[in-house]
Image 1 (cartoon, rainbow, N blue to C red):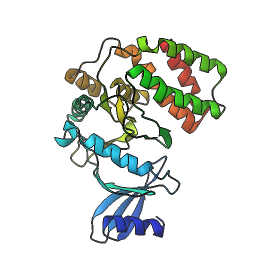
Image 2 (cartoon, one colour; image 1 turned 120 degrees about the vertical axis):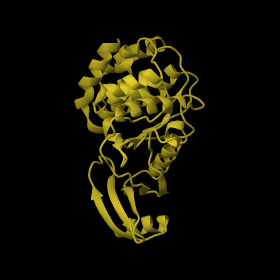
Image 3 (cartoon, rainbow, N blue to C red; image 1 turned 90 degrees about the vertical axis):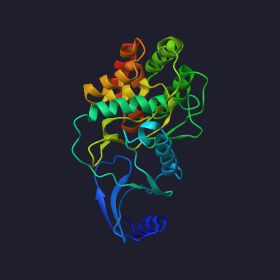
Length: 288
């Protein structure tokens, strides 16, 4: 960690940085285990090229999740925000331990309770980021409008600007948009979403319980988080069964999985390139 960042982190935390050890696993940011002069250990992520508000809105997202009952009662953990600056975010250090026997069931029940902590509407009162991509959350009156306007359309525009989206693929999305109000499922209240819930953003804390990190929060359809969880693996069958026991899903939810995987797949196209376009095509095949 550069000296200027060490000084900024120490000043924000009220104790000088004695040691900063690099941690692996971050695609977007650098991650550090920081030991302070008073002996306290904290987790710090840094990015000297980050947009000025990126860490601030992540901190707001963590706090928004922490308001929910399953975090307050300890079913789920979310790291506490300790300090934030334009180039860093300092969080409670969540040490890891072996999973408790009912880890998957706790995670499933906890996610259902998190989703039930309904926000005011579809969207959020501020924009944020998914990975390093901007994510608009302008409120919408209904979920189909929000999903098209705030999720799929911006990613399609970005992919078009990068020269990754063919005219034929764009026409297929236009066909989907014409049918979207009938495809999104029965009307439901907005859910409090993590927003980027792949296996890398699930952590096991020192007590062996589930913790959620690196969110991209908003009020949306609860099947969005569940579809993302199924996209790249990392979640056991018991997680989904426990979720359904706590809050059964609406009829047709299995058929909607590829619909709600389109957003993270398009995000991956824009983050990592056209190698994900085949997955986008296959998801469209399943919903058109």
